[in-house]
Amino acid sequence: MKKAILPVLMSAMFVVPAVSHAENQETMKKITPKTEQTMQQTGWVKDGGTWYFYDQNGMKKTGWLQDGGKWYYFDASGKMKTGHIEEENGAYLLGADGALYTNEGWVQYEGDWYYVLQGGNLHMGHLEYNGKTYYLDGFSKGRMRTGWVGEYRTFSYFLEDGSMVTGWNLIKNEWYYFNDKGISYNGWLNYKGSWYYFVSGKMQTGWVQDKDNWYYMNADGTMQTGWVQDKGNWYYLNADGTMKTGWIQDKGNWYYLDEDGRMTLKLKTINEKTYYFGYEGVMSTGWISFGRSDTDAVWRYFIEDGSMATDWRKIEGNWYYFDNYGYMATGWQNINGKWYQFADNGVMM
Image (cartoon, rainbow, N blue to C red):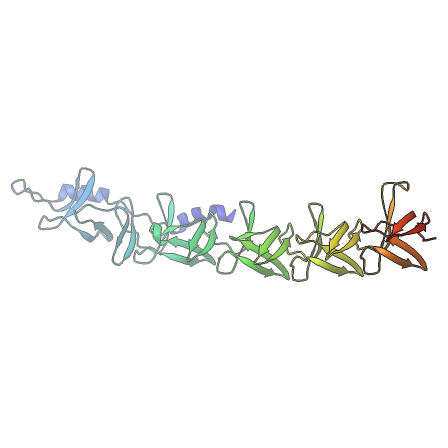
């Protein structure tokens, strides 16, 4: 509510209306002596809707003129100027009546706000006023800016009342963080013990890549560590937030994360060895049944390091044979030119 009424307050407090000299000019025109024979004019003269000022010699005034306690400005052709002017000593704002705004404070002109310094110069650049920061743009002749403002490859944001934002701000459904100088943050930010990441000033969520590493940012922008599930896949983020790949041991269990960081499920060949990872991704050891029912099930055995057994293997005092696919042999089998018989449970008879 304060932001909405600030321009009105400024207007009430600081706008110093330039008193129109129109009546004075008209009066002066009536009392200015003229001689029809010489046609010499002095003082204020309105010609074709434009005001001029003639000196005592009948010459048009150019440059600055002080009259009736107010300042006016005339261009090289003698026309009285209104609005913005720029000359070697700075930029100025002239009212609709041509009078220079000279009292320090805020001035609203044609819908835009300006800040006039004592004496009439328009303020340019940042302005500290009543505990807030404003920006008067030199490229737009001192107009107070709102919205995004870029300067020296940095960006700041100004509310509708012209005040600069700092800290966290939600702008068009995107979160931004601005430092104490009002500059939007880019890259990594540690805020109250949590890490955030910004690209073009916007707080990132989901997967982000920084150099050669991937990170996962939660919906609130905080960097994730440990396990995270995304689109049905599980990933693991190290303590520094970097995505883990390859083998990982967590709480006594072994897992394998592929090159994209996804947790492996079921069979996986790694460095020419085959491993089995159960429903929760835990590397399995011992006997594993593969098949939809007992009638079509086949058995594999995974040794202590998790790799799948092949060839001959002695398990708990019994001999078993596993082919190159890890399938346990049953019945009569010709192995290397010799016949062997195996029971239904795979034990060599």
